[in-house]
Image (cartoon, rainbow, N blue to C red; front, side, top):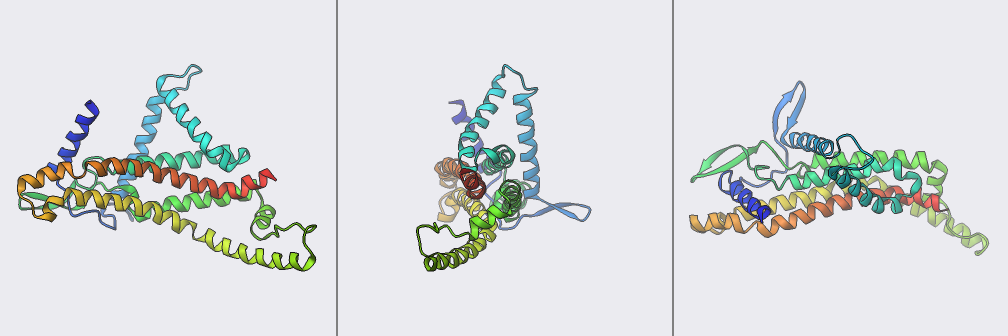
Length: 295
């Protein structure tokens, strides 16, 4: 009950005090500069999220004990749950080296996605008053994963680590065989069929190389599109009364009630998108490393 009361208070507070703004901008806004480096509102959000994760784990675990505390038990349970998902996909040989990357991506993306639902994110900043409502032009805090630069950076880091893992734990020979090798059994087909299939598998391998090159793009826009779309939908629901031209009282009521189902939907979508990102990177690693391990 206390959670629901707090949720409605936060929702009303973010709607009534900070207003809805003009929606989520496609580009992040520069807040200040550190020498030649521009610092944007999405960068500030990512720093805050990173600091929050570090402090949260430190407070929950502290100094690890043989008999775990409640906080340590929660963290260990979360790690165990992630292990049951990741290990069968990437294989035992690559699991421990890749777990830090995959679990880190999941937790970082998850907290980032949910941080965009907090009051003030995207609605506190510089702007102006219109008909008694404050319209935000330059938010001080922006949802991190609603910035294309952030999702591209995550995808780029994931793919660079993927290259490292497959070359270290599978090797060039295994990679070449997996991409371009003839999968037919020489003893079960004649020479001409085997040669034809060899050419065919090389062509398929070239197509696979192209798909690998586009993986950062697909990871980037999948995460960005879902988060940006969700943020834009919430802003539209906040402004629904103004869009429909409702009276002032009805507009204020709509600003509180209309976003509620979409808030819960975005909580679910934020979790699913973090899980999908982690699983896709796991599958990319496992397709070569775990496949080689099985053989």
